[in-house]
Picture (cartoon, rainbow, N blue to C red):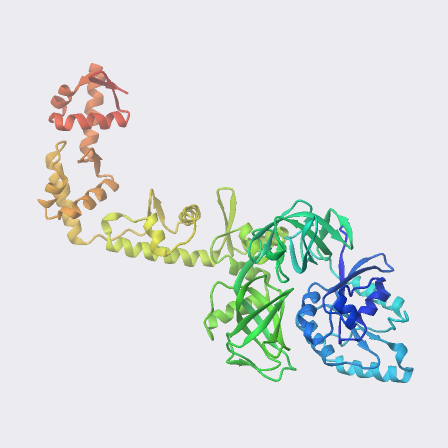
Length: 631
């Protein structure tokens, strides 16, 4: 049975007793900095762990409540399974309680408990009024139906009941994906003498193991896992949902900062432009405007960027819309990630939403096709999302990277698409490629149009070379991918592949002038039989320009009427007749000399020698001293 891992966190106004509550639950002091102890408030994230009555081992994150440290709060909220909204009984809901509520709503933290702390400071009547007031103020939030627990962290009152309530909520939590790719947002980085760089964070997916080669993104900084600690204990691995301290080899502390992410190589995308489903908080007093500069929070990351609205001139409070954010620095992100936006200055939370993906370019505003794509991403229909990604041939590895799903889920979606004839599956050497049926058909129609236009302009060339076609289509694939895709289209009878050329299935209509010149050229060469003239001189005599002569000759060779031998072009039927005569002669005489070939075929030595060499190459004859015998 796979062990499950859980993370519980706190939220709430400064000095409402979050740190004392964690101490009461776990026995661990999370304020570790001298300044925190002196000022009596949390400044940085604090971490602890506890054992619940059911036997569950639970990690705890203590976030700062002061408005100056919202960035730290946002970093800590990433990955929480249950959040404890701590409200002091003697003060009630305060400004930072409200902002934390907005943030938890935007991040879609799935479960919460309202903890009324410091109940020892008020009487029962006040407590009843306070609870009623809290319920009223939370009715339109994610905590509208959350259980309420009354505690005194200092005196230990109600702590057992709170632990039972946490246990009950965690029984509903689904296990995180420990078999997927590793992704751990880094919330602390430091150095230990004799060990080197240590990073800490909560694993969102995957399992970190000793000796693994990982990357720190953005930046593609290679690092090797030297050791792992979970709850201050050395372990061989750490799975999704666990807080871990990972000692890394090959990386310096100065290379890493909060906001970096420890990941499996070649899985996640990094970029400066993200597609977003954006929500402006109802509590905002202003709309979100085009090109507004904001603070973008994703996981443990805070980056400045500008909003690029796609379907609004400006986004009013309480409204949703599609947008992009143009970031001043690259960030690692995946579809479905929750983010928070804060006003640039003065800083306060204004909105947030869901990342729909890393974008390659800035999209045009108010374009229906762009908005349709955004809607598909936002609605998240699994098959439509996959179908969108296979608008060009992609390997399984590429799809796993772009969709951030397990192998099993990808196989399931692919089977569904194939069953409904919505995708083609084919091989590139040992690599499986998937291509959407509609996208493949549209692409092939475009290719055929290019080939057809080329054939009309160049009727003698019988198609376009694969290399030139790739250039005309602006294809950026590797040559191997290009050849594989071409072969797949030919198997679907979309066009013909003839050697290095691509040809349309429909026969090209030859212009009358070219038809006449071809016939004149045939007649000219037939009159010379096995002693053809120089190509350019002979072609010029029938009205074909010297620079066009080779194209005419190559056409006749490709349709099988002529054969190119040495520097000369021969009619195919004359070569076949000569071969028949030569074979008949050798059956009766065993061998033949060049002089005898001249007499047999009625040609000069100039033509006899190259013809014999051609027949040697075709394995009709073979040389035996100065003579030829049958092969």
